[in-house]
Image 1 (tube, one colour):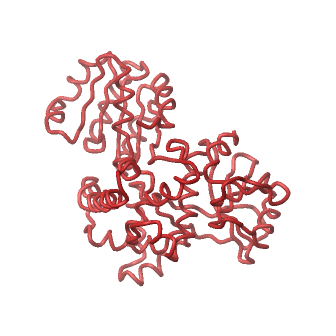
Image 2: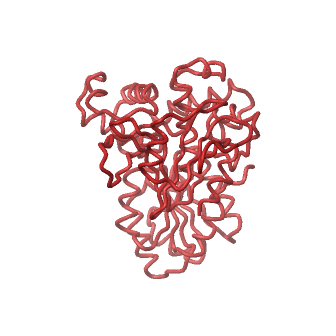
Image 3: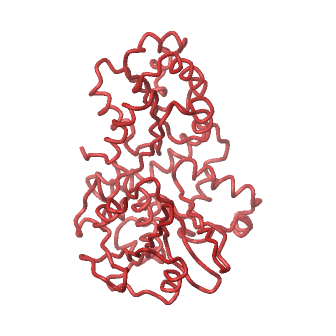
Length: 386
């Protein structure tokens, strides 16, 4: 068992809100975390809405749940019964005691819409992603394997690289053929897989719907719809451009990343670290993996974007909180060098500090308010940015 960073946050939220939603992709560990929390609550009721026997108990959900009003009720895969939200709202309004419901969902659009409408002010949302460096705590020798396999628990903990690859390939098939159709989305699995693989080849690049639609043989709104499906199910991250009030011509298109490096490598057929090291995507893969670590580890008020101007000023990640701005440049090099565009971006944005995240053993200063840091140290670095 690895301790999940989100555990104390969920525990705290259950003491504050009548309902807590734990969202994230399948197989990220939501059920394991929920069962661990439930073990601390006497007579907790756990219902998996994918099991017919548990669904049968909810034939009259209001009557059944009212009988368990004094206990924590965990509803797993809640998006399968969206009509429950209005009933939960009525039950919560009768008794606003905190810690009544823990809802687990695989991030369907239906879930988010229903919850925001029905349980506004009554629910706290939390996202559980696959493992990050703070949970795995890899040393410098283990870090490449963690990057190669990605953070899904069963991929990272597999006994061999072959087993890890096999699990990821199975996950991709299951997500396309079972999970997405279960959300009510009617797109052929083969079509969405082809699109997903195209995104893998464009990992870390600017989103251009028209160009991608032309290569894919469909309309721009159609590829936009495909992107939204993968984004809504936590497979893809869309990193927006920075909208700053500067006298610069800024890039306006977002950048697209596959959120889990292990799935990226599986979609590209990269089965080993040697395969990855010799592939043109290696730099972009490292960039996306580091971005995901930053996104998971930074405290929630920080907002992430990237900065690029028509003149060539650029920085990979800009973290903003109020009037504060921190920069992250991501380099796959043991001796990272910074371009003129980086220094221009730092001047344009008046960054408080900037960090160059690279596969180095120990960090060192590179310039005024600019430090090279190891990915292993991201946990402490992000925790310090309060």
